Image (spheres, rainbow, N blue to C red):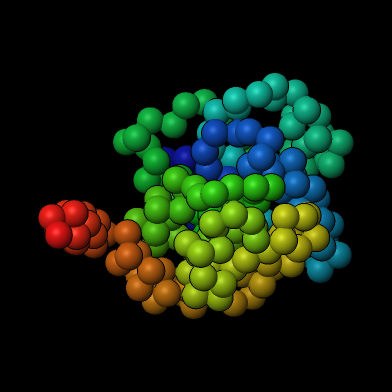
Length: 192
């Protein structure tokens, strides 16, 4: 967190990876408005969103949405290329990784989150829910701002520690050992 200039006590939600329409950053920005308003009503510090990844489309609509939603103070934009040797800082600084995708078959962010044992909130689309069991390695939301806000609040109420055993168990599925075993098994089947 020190490396990224993020406060030790900040509650940080991470959106990581290329920014494309199907990944739902715009939905997440509306979610952050809901969360900021709830925090103000409850007189608690707002949750912050760390966006780390390059824009692969026009950034202006997102920047305008941040302004229109009056959430500039809770958004941390790191929208340059993230070199491999800096990925760890983002995944380790986050309380939770969020994938608010509109559609997806899978995501390369998920194995990264498993590697760093960072819980995830994913949307109920494509193969994301198969990779992130609800309540075990993270939470599953519908791809809309209200559902995402509810799951983020649920995550903080439950606490990250609840998800660590599930993350560690699921992480084993994506280990190099399991991959080698799968390839060897496939090779043996091809010989038959």
